Amino acid sequence: MQVARLVDVDPAARPYYRALADAVRALIMDGQIPVRVRMPAERHLAETLKVSRTTVTSAYDLLRERGYLESRQGSGSWTALPDPAMAADNPWLSTGGDGLTQLHCAAPPAPAVLREVMLEAVDDLPRYGMGNGYDPMGLPVLRERIAAHYTARGLATTPEQILVTTGSQHAIQLVLGLLIGPGDPVLVESPTYPHAIDVARQRGAKIVPVGISHEGWQADLVSCAMRQSAARLAYLMPDFQNPTGALMDDATRAAITGAARRADTLLLIDETWSELALEEVPRTAAMAAFDTDSRVISVGSASKLWWGGLRIGWIRTTAALARRLAVHRSAVDIASPVLEQLVVARLFDRLEETRAERRRTLRASRDALVAALRTHLPEWTFTIPRGGGTLWVRLDGPGATPLAEAAAGHGVRLAPGPWFGLEGTLEGYLRLPYTQPPQVLAEAVERIATARRLGPVPGLRPPEPLIPMV
Image 1 (tube, rainbow, N blue to C red):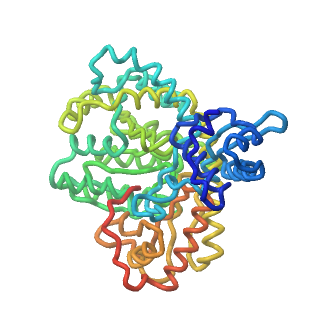
Image 2 (tube, helix red, strand yellow):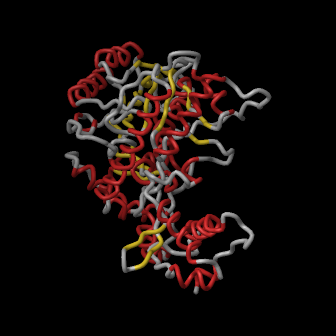
């Protein structure tokens, strides 16, 4: 019996049923027992392991509770992977190498379909192995899928307008690296994605912030900021903005695009969260749909809808600029990984399925986070976003930075507001993602409340400085 041969449990372990369940779970997570494999009957496994049937029954019950086993009366039990919205016991979902719950990172785990799609992509790989593996523009099959997705959204796009990148951060770096020089004014939202600010600083740009809130953007303020600063480029996130969760309506999109035209400002539009509406929201057009003179450059990513570990993003622009960016990328990398591109191409074929899974799991986690905050930290205020993956929370007391330091001592990594602004601003805010399971978030909020009440743990060294993972 293969399972019995693979299981290695110390006979002295207590309780034995839990050790047995942990051993089976580890084998499933390591791939030594494949998913959807039928498990031996409880009686047979008990006889082989020389333990009581009650022990095996308890182990199976625990595996079912954790989501690693599915059973049907009269048909037996099969191995499974847990629903990400319920899998609080999976350490890869909750903690990093420092053992802290990682609430500084708004990145969900992989969807259930990923393993199946990866196996299909591996079958595709030999056809591509006959070439050299370098395609600076990206594999045609993936560029076709991305272009078709834009066209389906009402924005006619050809594969020649798409450049595949190694994640959205790489895309931002390529665009600013080619189009922005020292001293060029770059307009950004405040708050905004921290790594976009990092790239602008590396280019020596003059960063021009324009404030937004939960309610979103005031087109006249954005227009005025572009005009008065003579911004060369504006970096905006109109779709479930990180960190506020705001969604820009079509009237504002049209107004800002028109203002950019009058100010001769390029628009770099980050659509990383665009597919993650959690509720029914007014249908919005892509920002580039309001573009009449090719000044809107769109950036997308597989990281939030599918999985950050794939490290695949893309740029939609004119065919000419896409080719210039492909030449420019040689200073950074040559091409994106072939296998990951094949995986993402196949994931586009499963778009509705994975989007439905994300909607279900993120909504469950969002609602759990909101309930926990209202129970344990009712003084904090926020607006519940209708999509995306983060809450932008207004604190009532001491600043976010000292709270983050105290929370680390109580087991939680936080993303304080100043990460998302300029020159120490936004100290009164905290960004809380809901990309972890509900149970993890509920426990994390309790720990944050304890840290707020008690402060830093006496004698505990502050955590090492951390690169924001957002």
